[in-house]
Image 1 (spheres, helix red, strand yellow):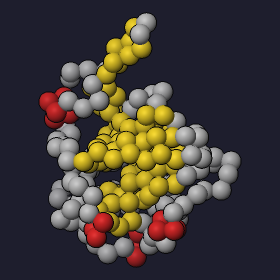
Image 2: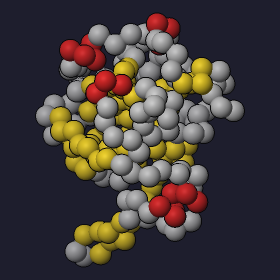
Image 3: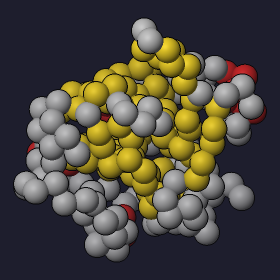
Image 4: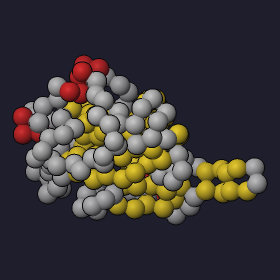
Length: 193
């Protein structure tokens, strides 16, 4: 499979969310890896055309970004990786009629483990920084459309994501502190089976 390892996210019940581990070639100079290769990703069941790449930088551990998504017709699939620091990265299934509706999948992404998380259409996505000075890069298949962005509450108790304790209060944007619970979310995505 062209050196690309694919694993399910914890707890492993949502097969559409994938952890991708590119093969890494190390020597005395450092390392080299292919972070995106269309043919290898297609072989792994991830069909994605990258339309935009963005990055976020978080100074402090305990910075929460999410849970975000864009509504159709500007929905996004995401490929997320960490260049410095570490995050607890989470995807929540918001596809009405899905057998995993309202369930979450998560993994730790770090500069050290070099993993990437693939988040398909129909999922809310977010992360909590675990280390200072964390730099995250997102590749998406649809450009950012500010009039179509939406989200759900990061701490919705019905979803029940067990965010790690980072030893400090979670830092949120004002927008993220006002996101609705999943139960109050308008229905934007439907499971296609």
